[in-house]
Image 1 (cartoon, one colour):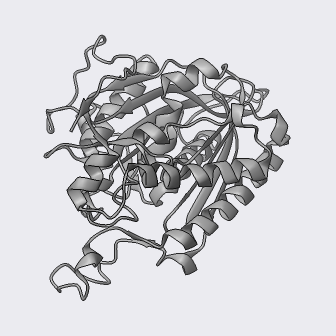
Image 2 (cartoon, rainbow, N blue to C red; image 1 turned 180 degrees about the horizontal axis):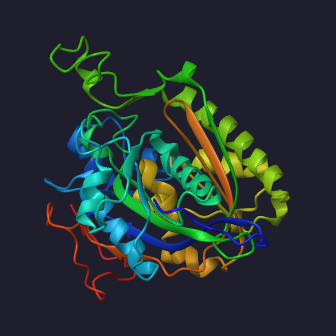
Image 3 (spheres, one colour; image 1 turned 90 degrees about the horizontal axis):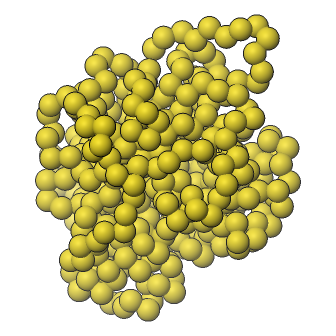
Length: 374
């Protein structure tokens, strides 16, 4: 990372979102298909009423988290005019391998040479943890540009026969490029808030496969190989923690809730999102999301909303924006920023998984609603 030298009379500096990218699998899976695949004792109506989800994207065989991250990263770089970042940060809890980290391979495939790159594991709060980390590094003059990617393929860890989790999750990746800028610009990150409580670590977990329960020892319960969540307890924690974190970041930014023009929460459950927004006093017209179409994409969910063209048509650059998330760990995070003045781009998952990128300037496209239902 290169050192950033600031003039002594420079205005308040911060990180500014200057590029936004998305990468989604082509395969669209509706609720009826999820129910049939897992022989679930539920139906489309129950899923919609309980979660707000109608469909989600599933990665096809051979498509990994890293593949989606490369597509989103490439799209974000194209959105920003293809600068070379000083650092790549990948938020994910479904890496391509337990070792090594996925981020260095993503940086290589993007043709970014030997820039530092690392994974960040904060589950569904991961993107905002990454945004806060990148902002601190930019404010501290450690680097001038950072590519932050949130990517997950939860279909690789969810039990298709689990009614509590199988209908909720989808796959995808979203990314933003942050550059050194000033607090008055569209896209400027004004304040961040992070928190964690390890006493609730058993509420959202994949029990098997780590050093606590190594893969060479059979699990006591075969379901321990999959993602597990205690939904009712998670719901209560999520509403409380996200509300408090969002309130804290608004106080840091000195923004009144009624001044927020765009609210984007982690797309976990529509009832959670509405409860948090109601408690904060954010009116329905200022709440934005895509949970109905994409489900819960974990670390990718917030950047995928930022990349959604429908949201961009509704929010003006510079609008006061509140982001908040909750995830396993337990972790939570919020950020206050001004809505970016960037044109989101989208790319399909790449097929070349080894060679460095030689980007085609016309390769990335605006996000379209093209779908293939399976």
